[in-house]
Amino acid sequence: MNTPEFITHLEEGQIFVFGSNLAGRHGGGAARIAYERFGAVMGQGVGLQGQCYAIPTMQGGVDTIKPYVDEFILFAQQHPELTFLVTRIGCGIAGFRDEEIAPLFADAHLLPNVVLPPRW
Image (tube, rainbow, N blue to C red; front, side, top):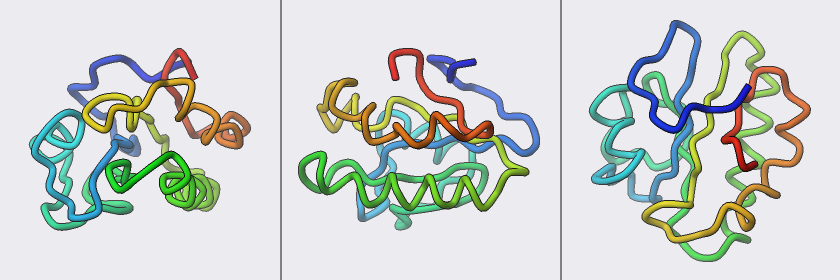
């Protein structure tokens, strides 16, 4: 199973995982959808908020994203009751390619409650 390209509805227990910026300004892309539909909080750029989870992707290179992805994977491990639908974080407004971001989620493939994009 892969994350759908467009998510417009979440079931109970599903979490929309999106790319954010550290300031939590959810003005475009998946961040805007997270804010408008799933409870993302303006001013919160990291972690669980509403029915979504923010991973910052706008602060530098891939190496600056990895610690936040690692934190997310640990969070997902600790919350097996939730299903995390990971969007193509960093591959829109942030400008990274799938092949740059996908390896950061290698350990997430082992988790039954994390759903990743098709190319990852």
